[in-house]
Length: 311
Image (cartoon, rainbow, N blue to C red; front, top):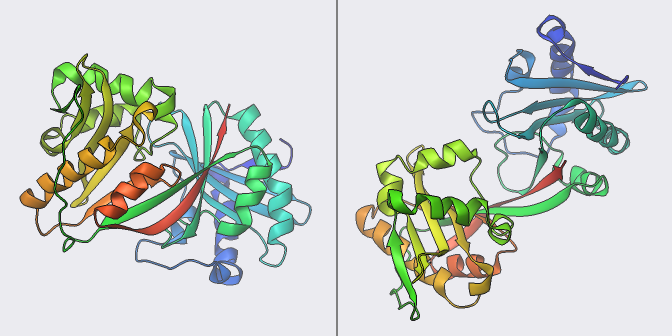
């Protein structure tokens, strides 16, 4: 890629100078709510964990920073996409995204490429130019997945738990069902497309089931045969309770088992941790799960799109 330059530790000053220019002339125009953790200076210091690129387009350029969650992670993620001019941002992005797509397909070995763009809420990273990027990236063959965070008010009443239909039962985690859990979340095509994982690798997912909090609070619905048809994995991150991987087999959509497992999980957590808020990730097109959350005291507070390119 003759116009894309990959930055090394020896050429980091070239990238750092452009970040400094952006801080003075461009970044103040970005529509994001700045928080304490936001520091563009971190992009001025080279790290072996990151990939730093400059796409030169005539007299303009676009800066990129990509990373993998861990060694062996097969998904490349963007944390910075920053054109050199606010006034020419549309023109630069339109020309650069096809270049970066070609770079990924020819120069990188990852199986998946995710560019995340916030639609509403506080920006945790600062990758995006938000609304300007989404249509351009989709036109270049990335598939959008629309996500959101929801939070449950601790003062919301806990709904009464109903009953499961005949042939189904609630199952707590045990090592003997771990393979069934893996099959449910990782080997079922319908489930893989119909839930939202936390940002963790497969290995990190398995590590969750070595944590007492996850072991004690996660729940699954099984058929009499032992097949898992719904699940909720509960974890703690930075002191907050997260309901992760809230999923229902598509053949059970509309049966109420999602509502059942969510209410039961909330009921248990509310008794054990009455003062703590509960958070959840969801795909916005998982309508049954979204409606269950709304009925049980959750309200959305952040919306974003993950644009995904599969090799």
